[in-house]
Length: 432
Image (cartoon, rainbow, N blue to C red; front, side, top):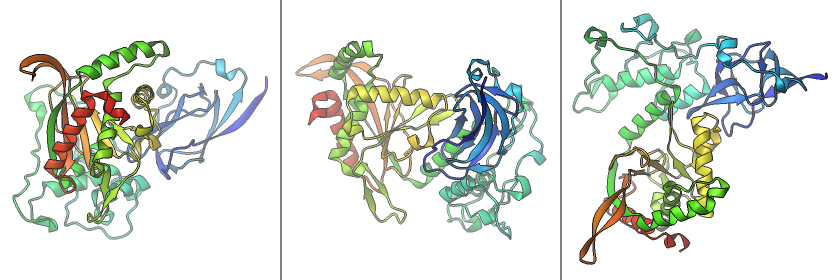
């Protein structure tokens, strides 16, 4: 049987360069199947696995944990053969070889407080460190997004390397200081979070946050404290839309396409944004100019076991309901399986966060900077609505629009949700 040793390169990961390797999931000698994960990378928005392009046996690993790689980088050498595809891979890659630990250590699930030596100590704002800061490109970008000067952060990694955890601890220390200290604006003091040994009150378990939650948590905090959020609540009568949607589901059932309300909402949002272009915009770095976008790429928040991910549906205005429904299903599955490429989570103009499949009547979604608005959708319910001197049952959909008050005022937001409700109430608006 013919055998060939072939190189494995990093596939296209979009515009990202110098992405850190955080986990190697195989070792030399392992037999792997096609599409089995070989290693994990971490960008500033998500983690992604690099799959094996073919079945074979790992002969040589060219990278190690903490190496930074880009599209096209050589990562492994694998021996392929005609029989390799029929071999059974290890049921769990972690069982064949203990993966190298990520840079950020996790604490054991015990009821005792972790030892101080295992936790990077927060750095006060007034403390400075001399010399060049050593950090990965992703950590440097993370620091830039939060406005952190890396020269003031002490690294806890190998050879003093600054990790994302160090940057997060630095920000936490800054926020815990009284207002006016360390060069921060004066005002009401911000008390430090209390340190409590919860174990003395009963049994506990320590569960580390997922990498996605650690990264998104810092971004959400930045967006919440730097963007003046206002939320406009409204309702849309989707009675006729639901009747039409159910008919479409019958038509497309043979093709395996499920038409969801979210597909209609995507289309309605873009129709409304075309009438209100300020909602399809971003402030420039100076905060003095508004960048108006002529394209309509909509981010959709997806609930995954590791936290929220926001894949982007591109050119929504050019697509029909059935195509949007199909793309939404495919992207949701990829996000939950951690197989969505980073490029598919970039370039969004506006975000939709739908909790309609779970419940609730209203909420305040956090704007996904640099966007200026986000739409929250809650669970639709049947209500009695007064129409033509009588109460009639109508299916009403709660809408929650959070907007950047620096760009959008209350009157514009109310007009936006009113128009959006009209479009959802009569899907013929899609054709206008």
